[in-house]
Length: 322
Image 1 (cartoon, rainbow, N blue to C red):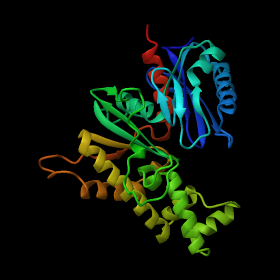
Image 2 (image 1 turned 60 degrees about the horizontal axis):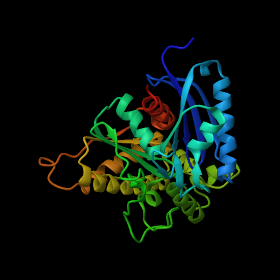
Image 3 (image 1 turned 45 degrees about the vertical axis):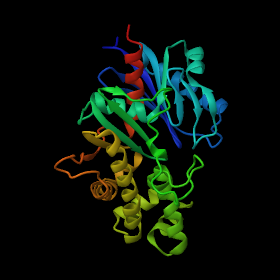
């Protein structure tokens, strides 16, 4: 027997799909993880999601699972559960909700991955607040905006795309097709791009060396490893990345006036390498005198990379509550 309701939470990102069975209190009872296929079209992804759900339901913790929640990168139509378009994946007009409900018989709720991650932090994070934003810094940059205790989605459920706020019109091309989006300047993809450029200019440097040892191209992980080891070039890349993130934080806070800004996603594991330059830039570009308009603290999210799957499950439980 199980205590309390449980749901399956699925977090679909640009490079991985994470799944879990989650209780109403946020406890993770079982987990699965897959790499996002290189050909991440809707058909391939349908097969992957069905397999993950089947595995999770077959787990001993899967008894009594009553719903499925999905958090997905891209423009998700709420509450229809259709992913209209995703800049870092190959699917569009993908009816995730319809596919999973048909395959499993379970009610399914689909929302943007940033929204569900923010929902998890607002409900169960260490810094719970009814007016906050979570920025997920991973392959791309997502956002979960919570106002008055509720997820802000916009008129058609397609809002809060903070990662595609422009911070430098002369900047690099983003996956969405525009130039200088926050995502193109401050994400894991941006760190990989900058790391490869640095390695090309200094093939004997630590970043290039770590990639050679791993037998592949430079990734953001190599840059992070080098920065933690004290490599000055890698640390300078984090200074650039964090500064861009801080400019974005100051810009969005000028509109909403949040009580707190949380940083989640894979890159938050770099800690102060990312957060300190982000905080400095957020202060530098803050609108108004701090004694009149307080600068919100910028702190790491409680659930880090787990917020997406936990939030997706919690949202499913809330939306299907009888």
